[in-house]
Image (tube, rainbow over all chains, first blue to last red):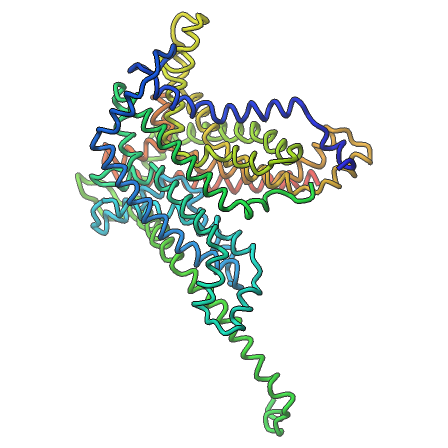
Length: 272
Length: 310
């Protein structure tokens, strides 16, 4: 500690910068809940007074509940399938010597960097050529492509983190591959699986651009919000809805990060 | 070979000879098992990426005709996209704006990542989660939040009006290129911080001590040791922001106004109201080619810079 202290000497300006950075990162988002309790149709200072009005109004709106259900359906299907595929893929990537591993991983991670609009229009063109009508199913297909890289990236450290010899011991004791997976591998990677389910659900739940191109007559929640943004008089209720979504997303992601914490700790060097 | 096969089998040699092809089979079957496990993902990705792209390329060679397509293959769309000044203008504006947003994000995130990697001792994990948490919330809502902040009657304008600093709302805040650049930089900060942080955290601290012992001050030490070693993080952060933001649709649509429109909006127009899918496909592919080309040039230049530095 004392040996490296002249390098890690406290740096006051940098510390202030870091705190300001965090504030700047959060403040714009926190204006949404702030104004959602404001008793005025206009989103502006000075604040008029506290009200639950916008939340109560939201509660009685049929389309909000419908689009919420649509988003939950798509999110649930997407997260379960993406995570299931992610388990197989992560096991293949970490456990076996696979020729062409690098290019395969690169290919699978492609959706992380390619602009979403390009995937959206490419899938739209394919589906329309095949004559598939746009629906929640097509949205789920689009979300699956967005979510799979995240599922695999969440699960890979889990598989890397545990000792292969535990699986071998199970095989030596007479379990076959199937039961070794369920009784040994799965319980060990389970926190990662749960984290992957939660994260991919959140991504699908919040995703807009794929849904924008691929949804039919049934909107997802972000699509519903997008539609409402055209009407300034709807702003307060959109603010209320947005605040709820942000709050729930934060909550789900925090649980996911917490479940996966021991793996994430590899991000932190032990010797500092 | 024929001689050894004809000679009486040596009981000690026999198992050895048998094991070798067996091990080869094991290895091969290991690869086969890996491919079997990988195959559902690869099938989904092929159906979701390769085939749609092939069709996108095909359709970009067609021509729109009323509600249908003329399916004879031509490069007319590409020629037209090249001739129309508006297409090129929007493309270069998009590249410029996301370039600006990328530079701003990397420059602003670097000190933050540096602080967490070198100066935070306890609760490092908490800092990392705090920095990346907003990234997990809806992109649409984060952009919407900026609309609330920058709007004509938004947080900044009404706040300044209420305190009496200005008499009438500042009009340049919303619907401008700067609004789009600010929002992009804010929304993609987490994408920059993680790779920067990882590359800084990996740096061997004893190298810094060595630099100090050899007489470098803090500034020279940073320029000669820390910065070059963190360059991989800077490169991946830049690419991770630049590539997706060039095709962004939501931010310019909500905050750009006519001045801040980007190529993504134009692509959406072709697939929506204009209903010229072949042109939309052409523009998507031109955008992809530009992004890929610029990314390669960038990687090449950073490789050169790395060689110069080390």
